[in-house]
Image (cartoon, rainbow, N blue to C red):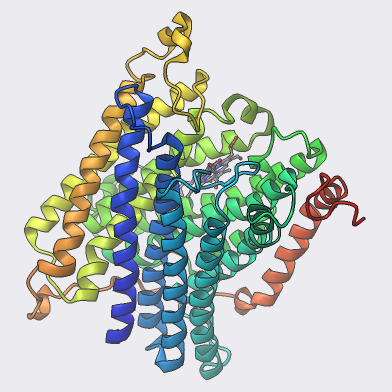
Length: 549
Ligand code: HAS
């Protein structure tokens, strides 16, 4: 790809891993605080650290990495960006980064210890919300640059289906733009006026609703780039093809339709939303599980087909033919395995009454560490091992490959220990979002939390292994970014593995975005209009919306 796109993608990756470095360090501190083994100095607060951890890992690391992957893949499949798209992309990068720096400075200076969900009535400095708004606007600019590049490709290739990678990128960006409308609305019209003192108070229920309108599709904004790698990169690495081009496209379209009108499943216990609307969104949540089940089916089919082609015999012989010694594959395979309990946990959370048992407990923390923290993060690690050397033109040496194996195995072990204990502690009632670990010295509580797995110590051991793994990853990234020798011979050059996808049977209407955007808005309208009108009608005195009805 063009050297400018390389530079752009590398800039995104640098910010991503810088955020990863600080974010994982804060994670390490957290497990020790919860274990009562670390006392913070007066100027540093548990919530300050938790906010840095959540924002830098869940929002910044993911988003920057995702854009690096998009830019590289789109310019590889649709061609060089050209000067206009290039400048808009850089503008997006700078606006995002100014926003990120503003928000991070506010959190570190203790003026925004509101966690990554920034629930009202917790209030941060107004500049924190301005930083967040700039970050989102930056992603829109960068996203529209890619959409513009895609549109010009479509104009030049009338009636032709776009390459699968580009199709998936466009779906994910459309999902992101529609999702962000909620967070932009609450940040610009509710939080900023309230934080700067222009309005007296804030409509809490409405702000949480607008946040989760965004918050749930946010998790699919993390997941879909991982799925892109599963669908388009993994088959190439294992020597196969995309199992079904139309199935893959349909799965992405279903995410555009069903990932947004489901935010109430994060608000099941909130009294301000009538049960009927929660139930409706529970049903829609079960719809959004379908494309993940399709993905699981497709992955098994890809593995089996490729394994049998390589001579795998019998019921499971194909399994042994997979390239287990290739870290690009092994890392992503482990990521997939983690998503089986991760997804099952999600289905439990979504099951209306069952959520009463796990809501606001450490179970949820366990859930998101085996969704975004492993399937997504570990897929991004598997991509990093070839993406960085591909962009820098350096070798991914044998010693780096060995280190990469150690890194992946330690991440998997650390996460297994930490997330299992979080799930069990959560089932026993250990709360989330708190540094409180002493349980008032209550004997029964302390006995509960003293099992081998259900223990804050196990959680801390897992967390420490994870931190060591994270540092190893930073070392691997730094080496392949700046130090490793340049790959001068062809065989040393690292490739962008992209599988062949047979489009001959794919229906053209799958790429008619207006149909999907239209249905998506119709579902959002059905799921949200009446409850939101209800919330505005009951706006508290002094907040925006009060007495305007
Ligand atoms: Fe979730 C809370 C429901 C998926 C992230 N979720 C969270 C939070 C985060 C998060 C961050 O309904 C906490 C938010 C907060 O701070 O409060 N989640 C779901 C459901 C799914 C789901 C139904 N979540 C995710 C993904 C995330 C993520 C993905 C990040 C990337 N989640 C909830 C609910 C809550 C929640 C409630 C709120 C709970 C509360 O009370 O607060 C579904 O999308 C899951 C579907 C997935 C599957 C799995 C398919 C499996 C595949 C792997 C195949 C494996 C292979 C390997 C091929 C059905 C694709 C085979 C190899 C072998 C050897 C077998």
